[in-house]
Image (cartoon, rainbow over all chains, first blue to last red; front, side, top):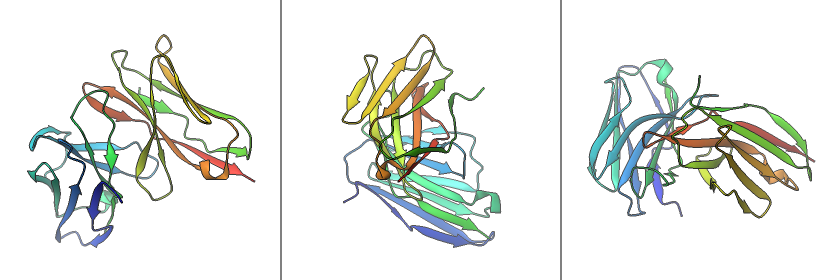
Length: 114
Length: 108
């Protein structure tokens, strides 16, 4: 059983499409995160939500739009993406945002933009 | 300079050997450190937290050297199943900063 669930697991989309990634956590955590992982690069933090409020936006292009309707759910809305946006998108949660707190990851959505 | 830096490897190690990785961090104010393991095409999973006094979990030992600003991971009696990418993580301004990972391949 995984505490953080992401759907879909794989997504192929054209540059003109609009799609959404979904993340759900069953751990009772208050902080949720979107990360991008490209080959041979460190995880890049995209967005942070703490108690449903967005606390971080690490200069992410506006073609990525997050939504956090409640502490358990997180979405990433995608539109007019570029081929270089192809990557593994990971959702994570932690008890709180801050130090001394580990992150628990979903299995990721492997996104290919064609 | 990258905030958290790791040797990307790969480290090719025979089964049963001992292997050690280091990871350097640039923010001297960092307080929390972790080692995560990521299998091919899977999500990262916490391997162990790294405490100031060092900590051990079975065959795995993590150490923190604040003076030289690095953390280390030692794996003893390596198993084939230890093959993975090991990610070093430190905190900076309440964010987790990730290294790019060190790839380990254990060979029979």
